[in-house]
Image (cartoon, rainbow, N blue to C red):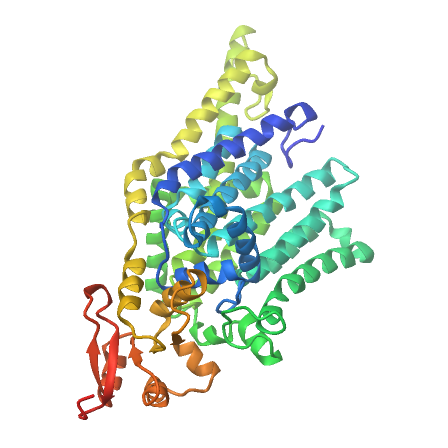
Length: 543
């Protein structure tokens, strides 16, 4: 029989309970799918959403860091989910499935940490239905896979510790599996690299003598490095000998590969983490309250409870929390809320451990008083001894009831705000990108060159490479200009204007004014695509 890590006798996991152990994660995953599913974006979207909806079905290469794990998984998922709708919808659905997997993994993790299944299920729901997680689950985004892989990584690590404590002969396999999951996660998002030191500290705290096992360390290293190399081969292969229809930059060259893998494009986005500290702390506090409601002040208490019960897990997640928060405070590019999915997961596990401790203490105290009264000795049962679990049907029933009540309390902020969260995350009516591209392509002339920018380029790429529409068009994105050495947008216009129809879409009024200074433009007639301009000719020539 295998018990939960440092459980003190809580919730045994024997062969007869394996099926029951699978049911709570499945129930939570199904609940998450049913709750979030109605809000899924039905079609293609602008910005990065459109890029991923294009790249994954054709197994192209994405913007830094390439996200090869996400691309490979998405390619397979697109094939498996084929009966469920168009490609764009399938990739959106993948995000929902990743969040559902993250929720299920959280249930397994918390059940092993606390032995309290209702609390574990509440934590799984809390992670998935947090505002930012819910929002990301409704459209294509690799951060949802990051959340799932981090949750699975924690399950494997904690399971490895439990296997060592139980002297299981197969314990090493869990750490090797964790190395593979870590490698897959690195191939999905570079945020995983922030977990390298915390995972190393955890492994050494669990098994300090692992340094004396060079052969096993070599196996783990091979599993980690081999997995990273295997998934990242997608970039040079799909940019080189097996070229995909759409490739970002030049990852088939040595410099180009590292430019993508190391995200050199965004290196300038890092700044002083202590700069403007008051504002950053205020924003973090606001984000935490938005995610956890009245539970937010209890997160530090939950960490202390975790440190008391599972100090190694607290070392792992606490150090990961500090490192991630410092990095996030340094990063000024992107929707930073996406980078808090990991911290949200860790905080939920701390709260769950606190809830587990509280349920045990309350049930133990009540059961102890009852036992003492029966023998004329009130309060003789040690609080937290766990005797209520083994004290007969009455103790088990009492424990289950208290655990259920505390689990429901964990979900009060979620339940109270569920309508607002659903409304804010709902993209079920978002067809703006489809309407735009339909209107634009209906008016753009044959064999035209479209000088576009990221938000609209991704939608045009989807229409061309996935829907198979308008293969006659040449779409020149700002990234394309760099890769082909075309110069500025005005240089691209000059290059093609004498031989082909040219259309231009600019990011803002400033960019558009730069073009207007040299060329006469005419917007398309359709209101949905009025931001697309036909280039009539050099300024003042009348076209």
